[in-house]
Image (spheres, rainbow, N blue to C red):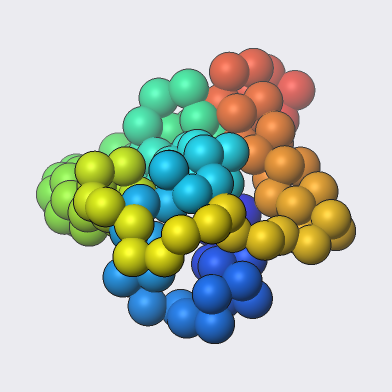
Length: 131
């Protein structure tokens, strides 16, 4: 949900949902870029974010049922997905911005993004109450 909220913030501010709209986002709006990076890492299942625990338990459940082929397919597709997620991160942090000025985010949308970020990091660092 958080990644979609960041996409919405970019669409509202720049009028574009294109991947090119994320070029240089870290220079324009560093907090928004950090939030998006955390969401992308969570989607990829990187440790210390909530998505890691989600993928771990799904793979674990499949392995307990003897579906090792499914775990293998999931692991391979996770690597493929990470490649594409990191392409977005490259656009945000390495590519030069196409527009100048920060991304304008409405207060309610900004609060929603921060709550999602806190949830992703909080559940990733301390998952015990949730699992």
